[in-house]
Length: 114
Length: 112
Image (spheres, each protein chain N blue to C red):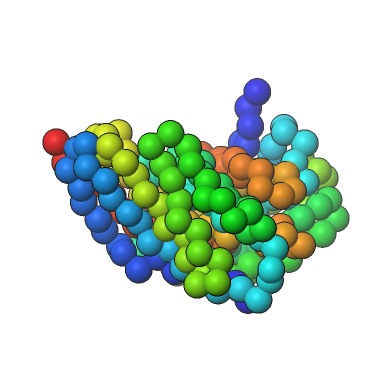
């Protein structure tokens, strides 16, 4: 069975600074997908970034980038130039290639301070 | 374009009562999911359906049943509600692969 672990329940960062959120996962599969979702207080789930396991190049989306280490089963999210609007819960997620099962970690609450 | 629609948004049940949470998507997605969200526990997968006519257990299926009525609809049933099922429930849908999952607005369920 796959598992996703986020070891940082809470993080804080000052506006304009950089923060990295950690995520590790466990799976015996070779092909899969990884995601980071953001959940602001509105409870809406917003996709931040995605990564396919067979792609070695780390995904980037504007201020958001990942450090994907397949051998270490690690998938961290780096937020550069943090903005107040980045304040939210961030969830790491794993999606199995052959079953489409989508599971989430326990989340990291990020607070951006002015 | 409505996306994923969940009903109801709020519900209070007495212990032992039953209810069905409804979910419908209009994006022609193959996969649909039910999650519960509890403080400190993240989103935990209850059941999922990779295609019409199939359902599979997730991480916390006990006390729940699901029905994939057709490609659009995926319902979650609590046969005999317990206080431990007090939670916020989310339905989601996605297509195969690395496609984004779309979520409903959530149902806040309280069992007293």
